[in-house]
Length: 438
Image (tube, rainbow, N blue to C red; front, side, top):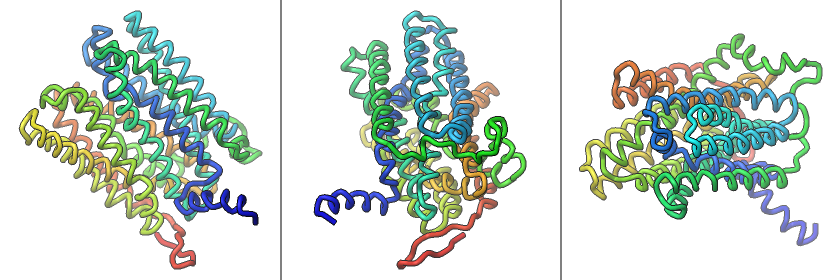
């Protein structure tokens, strides 16, 4: 082997040891940049629409709920369509949907047209799951089984790195550049389109793996059977249904907190919008740093064990700390803000304990991996819907924000019971040999 060839091969070896399929490396970067664009508005959109449209928060929450429902549907369709046409084409479709309906959404806001804004934003919800979760299917059909947990972890490094972490950080800098206030927020959302375009181009040009262009489903299955395979699998295999519910609960509190915490941190506790956005960046940057770590831990000590103790128990405790610590420290104090950020970071870190669910789901149905991943991605997208729906339901019933938080803790208790049924045979490498863990 020549010196040049050896040099070229070395980085690929390092990537493989980390759990990143080298052939997909540019796809991970593309997802990071795409999701950064998608996440720019995540922590100011609700108050922005309230002000621009002149509608009450409940009306705006209904727009977010319909958007979340489209995310849920798009998350299922991403896996099913990837089975039929290959992940690459589905990623292109997601990109086109995102850009077109983002443009219509921004026009609706400028015209102060509530109906147009609501419909466009809801339909844009199909965009990011088609792009990102189709790539996750690509990761699962490319990665070796003993590295699968780590590869899924790196996917969530990219996914969460963009939404909401780098997206919020971009907003912190861009809002004042574009004039501050609602004008600056609008400028930031316009700029987010450029990020989405860049993310798509990085993935589209950089990834040339032929497996992404091919049908994954068995050749004999009709389109109808492929499109419904995930649903049929869920109703015929209780473990798939349990795994679906665990993943659905996983990040639901994250999206619920995006609704109830901005006003608490920025206004009630007196730390302002910029500090709320910075807190979000810190919380989910912590999540990014440990996503791949928990994927590797799952490969080592067992996926189910990692999800149960780190993901579920840890996240429930972290969520309570993120809610209660800001209430207990002096409002507006610098040290109180710092302690509140640290509490949020603990939640972000332990949320990564759910990462091995992306390896558990296809392992529950090795003969129908595509269908199992369709249900996994549906649950991942559905967490957006569940999070906003829990907030809406609790507040509509006359409950408070505190009741919302405890409702999420109750959901984690349900997940703790369900995950006990999700033990799967698992291979990992130890001392140069392959061993099986459960």
